[in-house]
Image (tube, rainbow, N blue to C red):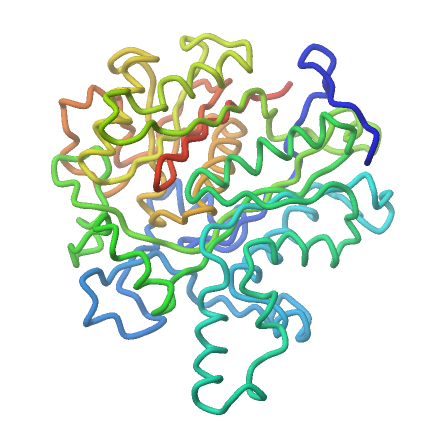
Length: 416
């Protein structure tokens, strides 16, 4: 792909999503997960992967009954961590959904851009335990690569012979959207197809304990009350694992190969970073929203639904609600937080919300926000609660805010 000049927005190829694969706490497989999401089925429960009874937070969205060996070659399972297992399985789903045959596609026209925030925490912990217990000869030779943030991108590239531009975004929750934005740049630079999205898995003891010092995880033990973004009882968030992988293509190339109708277009993207705490400057989200809409050449009134970040802590919720009201007006657009059924998946969260937004555009329905029984009226949001809302949908905005100030927004537009 070297020597391909970037193109301006006026002449750049249209980037469309043609395939979706999902491995999430409330469903493995895109349509199963989507049906569960529309039904308000939650995957949040007490942690089952290890004994968390002595931890201050004990809930998570785990991908249960998931056996990587049922989907992947035994050698690949051994070489990779759980975060990569989720992504590799979702990639196979997404490519099948898009009816893409990598073996018959020129290898340098296919790229891979994924996001990850926590690495292969459980793989690293297991191998370190082997080291202390038995010595260096007991440690897997894959310890040096399986835990790494870019391991998923590399393994997808190797497995499918995708030798075009590859990369990884590390920006916590915002990373899943940043990966989509980078994938669009790759398509605009001449690639025909990019596998993109994000997955995370940090629900081992070592991975989980590293999340506690922020003080942002809820300590509520009732799964029905623990994670309530924009609610009067908001007390923090519940972490989760999994995510989504999507196929992003040059629309013209997709038509030439006979692809079906795309789920939607990546019409706009923007990233920003919050100013230093105490600077007196406002958070970056309102500016990021406007920049993404400008990139899509749309006005706030053109947006039909917002898939909010929905942090679940009072301060973060106030900041996001204030930005949404500033850009769209109070109660100006329906807002939903389907991650109340999965927890916050870190790098997998933005990608999973993008998948939900694309399916919402396909089916003309907004998935619900669950568990929030008393929305805070001071936020001024039209929060979609309890049941799906069937409304005409043309344009969806997805928001993701990562720990430390990372902010990303994508604008997705229905095609056809």
